[in-house]
Structures are given as C-alpha cells and as structure tokens.
Amino acid sequence: MSSLDFASAMVAVLIGVGAIAWVYGMLHRPFDYDEWVHAHESWLVRSGLRPYRDFFECHPPFAWYPLSLFFRIFGDSYNLLF
Image (tube, rainbow, N blue to C red; front, side, top):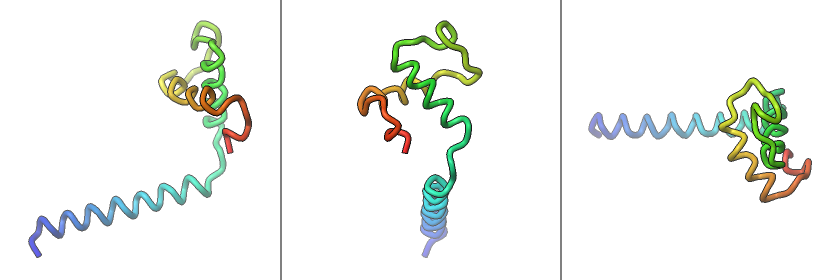
C-alpha cells in the first residue's frame, strides 16, 4: 500500500466520522435562539418585508433569502420547523 493510498483512506475515514458526528449533533441538539430568529426573519422576507428597511436584525441577511424559499414552498406552518 502506497502512502498516497493510506492518506486517501485516512481522509475518507475522517470525513466519514465527521459526517456521522455532525448528523448525530443535529438530531440530538435542541434549537438555539438563533435558529428561531433566522426562521422568523426568513418568514418576514417571504412575506415581502425588506431587511434593514422594514425590520432590523443584527445578523447579515444572506441566509434569510434561501431559507425563505422553504416558507414559499411548504407554506406558513410550524410543521416546517420540526
């Protein structure tokens, strides 16, 4: 086994362990304050309000636009959050 094959195998193992740890953390961690704030701000953007003009938030608005597509696709429901 060459050193390149060994390095590739180690990288694959590390990525796999990292992915498993990430999924476990996402499934077993409660929502933090910021998740609710981003969900609300995304809903406001989906409703037609503009950040920093119609409402203020101290987070940058980039994440709100892609997340607002979920509200547009699935509707305004709490089921979207869970």
